[in-house]
Length: 261
Figure: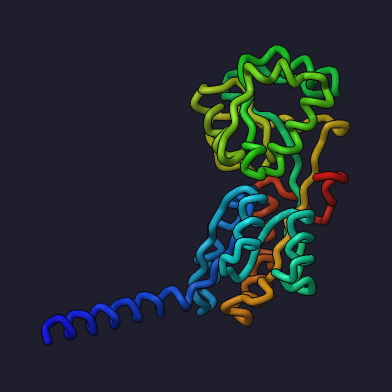
């Protein structure tokens, strides 16, 4: 009898735990928007809504989670990853909303001499001169990491970069490594440097080497909380949250990725 009482109690506790999680919206999100959505759970709760949990990672990792069958309510990734999810009928194509566009830049630690990235030749000289360069890991599906690896190849620097390139789980990790003086230069999206202290102002890559990435949000085709997800989407494009995107280096609009990214 004691065994069955304990078993019943355990099941009740487990059920209560599941009920708590059942009321929580899950957002799979590319890490590039992390600093821009920090206050979204608090804002959403302030509207009397369910709790929101964000899971951050590279765009490729978030896309793969959705493809592998992870349950989610909303996903935030670039257009190419989103197009794949639409094709697989994993998101509601009609729900897509662009949240903003962000550019690439290079960061150095506070006190480091300014880096000249005025044109492609200057960019190449800076990369050759640098002792070490950090980027988000292409192997993890990082949008910027994949692009920068191709850029280094286009500049004829594949061999040069082999000895000095350091990869990180996310672009912000590379920015933090620069601030700690672990590496000399970090390259990534403007938004990934916005919350990192002890950096010189980010220097944008020249237009000929620039990557402008738009991030798009969409609701899962089988979202556990479809109505609340729509209200969350409204919040993401509200003036309050859009101001946070702007503060963290995003521009309005929907500039698409170059072909192949």
